[in-house]
Amino acid sequence: MNTVDERIGGRFGARDGQPREFAVWDPLVRLIHWSLALCILLNGVFTDPEENLHMWVGYTAAGLLAVRLLWGLIGPRPARFTSFPPSPARALRHLAALRRGDRTVHLSHNPLGALMVYNIWATVAAMAVTGYMMGTVRFFGIDWVKEVHEAAFNWLVISVALHVGGVAFDTWLSKVPLVRAMIDGRKRVPDGAKVE
Ligand code: HEM
Ligand code: HEM
Picture 1 (cartoon, rainbow, N blue to C red):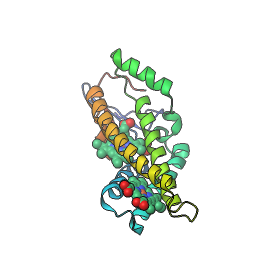
Picture 2 (cartoon, helix red, strand yellow):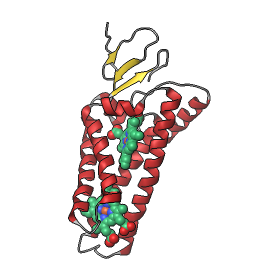
Picture 3 (cartoon, rainbow, N blue to C red):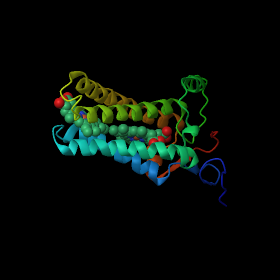
Picture 4 (spheres, rainbow, N blue to C red):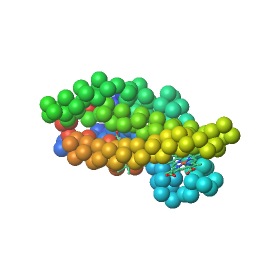
């Protein structure tokens, strides 16, 4: 029989030895995630920065950020900022726990992943602000604005590489297929693993 975990999304009971399933990522979080990745790919590789399309795609990324900010306040539990506070101290404790062999599964982002998530969103915000500034009379042609836009992009590329590496590492360590969860919304937690 299915059971419902009141703390976080729905939990779907499993037979012995089978992974337990937790509904964690709602459709909006998933849509925003993959749309953001697409926007970055388009603007970083395919659009011409001189053309309007680059600006529209960039503003779309900024719009996704705005909706995600709102959703972090009013969305379902795993999507809320209170479920993954930006805390370096928690991230360090998480690292220490991993080294002790603690394999507790976090139903929202783990504390280390949370720092990366805030970093990525902040970098996207910096790109949108500097992109906008380049088109204003006051900042048009000012070198440092363009330089910050470029530096933010380089930082974003590094961050995304670390992000994807972190996802792969955590998937291997925890045995929870994280990418699949970002596609269908459900984390499948191995039988016996603690969840938090
Ligand atoms: C430009 C590319 C990408 C960007 C900017 C990006 C950004 C993000 C952000 C902001 C989040 C937090 C989601 C939220 O709570 O709103 C996230 C989570 C996640 N991303 Fe990405 N992502 C990118 C590419 C990818 C790729 C290629 C994969 C798959 C290999 C991936 C897998 C995931 C997963 C599995 C999570 C959830 C991690 C967890 O369970 O804590 N991402 N990503
Ligand atoms: C996710 C958001 C964005 C990404 C990933 C992105 C990425 C880039 C990249 C890779 C370049 C080329 C830099 C170079 O010349 O080496 C660039 C240039 C530029 N971007 Fe963006 N951008 C974003 C958002 C925006 C926005 C929102 C605007 C304006 C509304 C904008 C306006 C520009 C302009 C005007 C340039 C040309 C700078 C120059 O060469 O003079 N960008 N962007």
